Length: 124
Image (tube, rainbow, N blue to C red; front, side, top):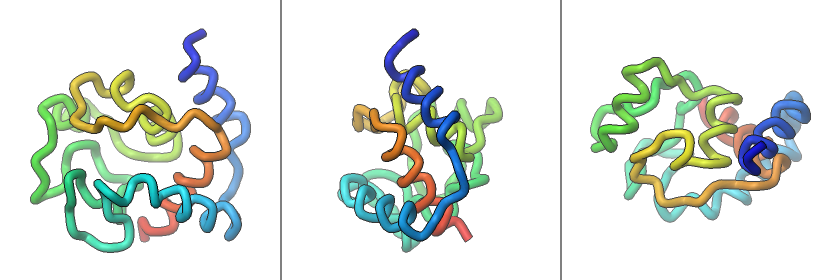
């Protein structure tokens, strides 16, 4: 099994309801992402803003120039939720080949859980 698949499997097994501590840890972890993404405002940076990302089809935010690969993924049915974000954030280029996102991925299941808990908290 590929390492990112092991991370995703561990994430899915450990996934639980978010607590305030998980959200705060995720917010701190999001500092790595903040150079390219906003999460608490709707301004785009190098990457699209992530406020309200949960439930959003991939590549669908008006006003952001996504890669063809990301637009095609959304047109093909990719919608961001705990599972799809977990998979993408553990291996962006393996999940959406051709994505513009250069981030190599989060490898620790606890980091995935926490950052997704944070993104859920800013998704309304």
